[in-house]
Image (cartoon, rainbow, N blue to C red; front, side, top):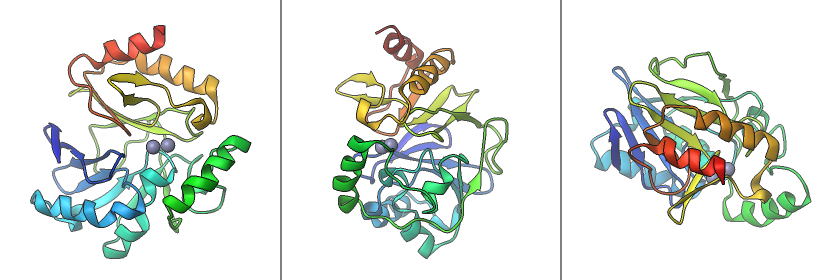
Length: 227
Ligand SMILES: [Zn+2]
Ligand SMILES: [Zn+2]
């Protein structure tokens, strides 16, 4: 576990995926849960760092891909918490719509990836959209970041200038990237999302994959926009 700022932690037990823990005054929130196969490792990580999993009262899911939400069913079997997601990704999260991003190429990728990352849809998720504060997260703004999926979400803490952007951007090989073409539900929307993120005061950027970018992260986002 890595401390990002006061009450904001990177969870490092989810393999190639980043999940985050937000510590509130009353309880805690997960941002993403990692794939199904690392659910136990996430529980161990919380325990090893002195956190009680029972204090997790909710999870905000940045988007309905197996690597970010696959662990939910296993985690909720141990202790029930609320799950929030954007309305456009809730059908995939709850098994009422296909989980692959769409298109033949994505379908094929889903075909090969799903067996590696099996997961059970959850029974219910609560909708959250920009302008609606999530209970327990009064300082966080919810952002809609469509492109990678229609209902991709981000969370932004304006005072600490920390942005959790899910897979809207990823930090690979020391460079910031938009999602690969084959992982884009809507390329034009992804570009608009990038433009809106480039206008934000972002000091720390915490992506769904890859290392944190600390200190003036807005510069990296601006550079990607100009590339
Ligand atoms: Zn994704
Ligand atoms: Zn991902």
